[in-house]
Image (cartoon, rainbow, N blue to C red; front, side, top):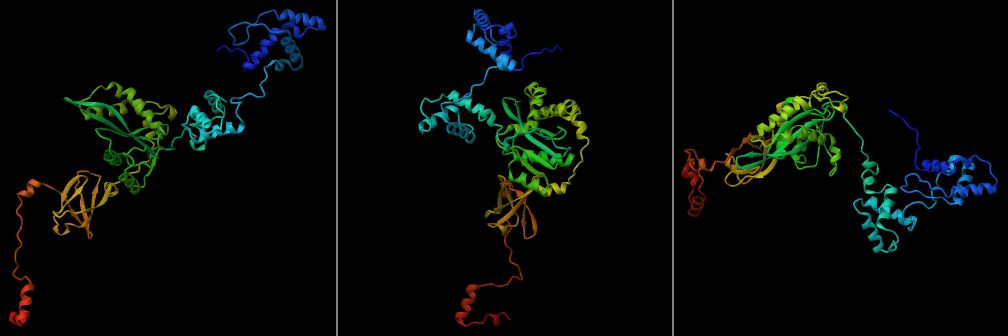
Length: 443
């Protein structure tokens, strides 16, 4: 590549231009009269300054000042001098300029016009002293403009980071895809995915029609049974990842749960970058599908045949599959998952022996527990499993209420036992009134 030597900045370019204007005068020895005559003749010539679209002439006094400056300090003497009063908002005092910058740092969403208007209304700045553009220049010069404010302060410093090894941290997020076309109606498509931080490997991906905590829990269960669990989860602040069930399950499984700072999508950069890759390579060209199965097969094919086997720049040219293969698997049994995903609530059993769990009515055969507050437990390990009642160290299974079946069920009649204990309160009072000894008669 051809390299050229040029001025390092505008000041040096101006100094070179002035030296060229002076030309041979800088080295000629002239008497005062000859020097003035040469400068007067030079002042009649037009020159084009650096960056100027027009030509101009320079006065004799200006050319003489340049000549003396060059003889004294060389090229540095020809550089333009910075004004001592340079800077925006010179009509404001230093205290007023500091106040404006402090307001912006404490209220980053306040515009320069709003800050100026408020200070003028309060009488802290004279009306017409400065314009809003002047305030903007002041804020920009002191690093308090809105762009700089996003990165101001140690708490907002953002650095590129990456976990040391696979299975140390997994990201999880949801992506909205094009809706399904099922006959005359449409259905939403929500893609849940989990990405390993160190390898960028897609640990799990699934297309469903909803964005609930139960969908995320089902994905966690299937992934844990297939590839184990990570040390930490890194989620956003959506309701899908803020539920009590997920937090409790992670605590029981010794998996640390981390949430990103609200309204900070840059903190989820790795996951957002994958969604962009998925859209460009798959979703944008998939068209309208008729079933979730079709969407799921395309997602798996994209990951297996392209994403996982393509060298990644952040992995020093390695593929996500190569780095993921070096992981240490943390296995977990079904029993541990079942216990970890068991949730318990307190419910009052209705007088008819039924209780509502997650919007579904269940019935309890133990009728003597009607009207009592009981602990109802259910496991999210398999949502199809029925809930149960934990009472007095026992586990009482609940069955789903079937009103039609109950209408045909024969109700048992109370049978009088032969050895039943006699109990007649009214007869006892009658015997007492007439002086009859019932015990003697019975014997």
